[in-house]
Image (cartoon, rainbow, N blue to C red; front, side, top):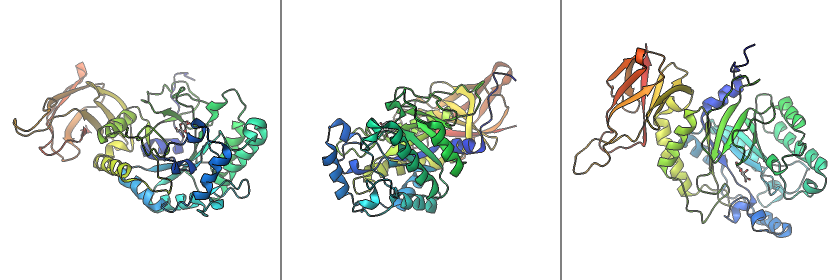
Length: 417
Ligand code: GLC
């Protein structure tokens, strides 16, 4: 067997890659404080005091269908929600494993049951984030094996009671890198109940793109630029996903004004798709479970862009075609090529239009197919091109945005002969 062979993705991994864009949600007791999900640990809040947040957790504004509809408008295909985060509080009914869960709070509901229903109504695939660290269970520090029994049983509850789940997204093994986390047992149990589920275990900020256990289906790039995976000679095809905060916190950040711009969000999804990675963009709902207007506005605006170019975002794979600067192309499952053009100027009038510099020919290398036609995907305007395959030359004329528009990155579709 050729050791440089690239393995074929399994159907569920291929389907995951093609979803392209997902919503991450960090929501829990900590959201009531509005200072991120690590607040208990970083502010050294004693357990007894932190525990009181359970008594005020009403989830009164949590409407899963509304959140799923925001994700859908943003062009996201899946949502990963924190079923339990490091503080140990579960949004689901742990069915007797613990009373530190949503049904035992004033919310009195199984919020994960609502979540999966809300997603399904909107055609969004639900995924479960689950912590592996636990700041609440004493066994985490004192009797690690007893803790792992509890963890595995907790995940079993999630496997058995909520129908088919898109995947499980674990996070925290980086806290005890040398421990035996009994991953064979955990993942084996998941495969038994949820054979199609994507299994992710976040490798953490300092190990971006690390492979990990053989059952893992996707590597993670936390808060960073994803790099292309070298899959030659690997025993299994693994997907990639880049998760990122919309400001600088995962959990609700009431005083975090470092919100990304629509431009940054658009450029970032392009960086991810260029290397075949999914973009998992996080929001932090408020303590009562609402998506605030700023986050909602950013997602919905980005969604206009995503929906405009959807053929080029989902169902695409890297092509090896590279332009100048940030420009690149993707190959669609439909056989077409999609060219991503950055810093394009807009047409107009010399007294009013700024930044016209990018209008003109755009050159790309690495094309294997001969091109038949090129057009802007947003308005169908056809674009003149030249190609000479002998010298790997391909260039099309990138006419500017019509006056009144600037999409940050503009996509051209090419038919191949
Ligand atoms: C880090 C943080 C955690 C967050 C995760 C998301 O691991 O510890 O709070 O949930 O990143 O990727």
